[in-house]
Image (cartoon, rainbow, N blue to C red; front, side):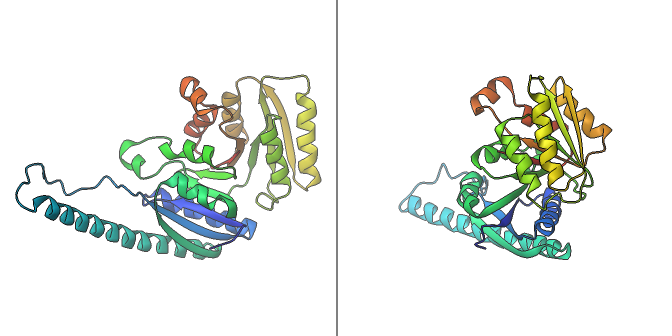
Length: 287
């Protein structure tokens, strides 16, 4: 599907894929945009026969072994493609049944970040799970690919958890910075949240122009026809955002993502990652 307006749903063969499909179908309906499911098969899957070939010797043994391993790899690749095809067709049917527009599927071999970077020019919104196949066994609360993908792309990314329900109340975590200001303008000019009440929250360290920045965001959204509740609550942003989401019965969060370098995040942690771990709500990440 070559369309500069498409929604791309990145899925793997875990039970989280159904949640991604439901969320992507909702976004497709709201944006009246075509939807494409993408399944990336790793070039080097950690699969093998389990046999020990270290003692293989003899005339032509090396060549025969290489030929055999090549055939086994080809067979595994063919099986992975077929399983992926069945998997993607099921998700396409699920999305169509939910009213998604113009649903297509794509299966690629490669690395996830590289493949998504190739798709970025034609992308309006990426939808992906915060966890994937690895979480089925490791119970990780945040998939290893999430931060890497968010840092690699410069398009909005909607991340979902185990269950997806159509949002009724949305909250924007606004900090007055360039990213969240662009986010406010994006929300104002997009049909994604039209008709839904929005809670505009500014937290963290209060500055001399915090009230002015919050007023700008409120007026921008109200001018676009949104029902806005705005609040300015100084203090630890993660704690205040989590408490407000609970108190206001928020269904979806919009926030800036990974403002610091990967090295700083490694040394001091990431507020984005902490919020994604602690929250079960679908979250639209802005870059």
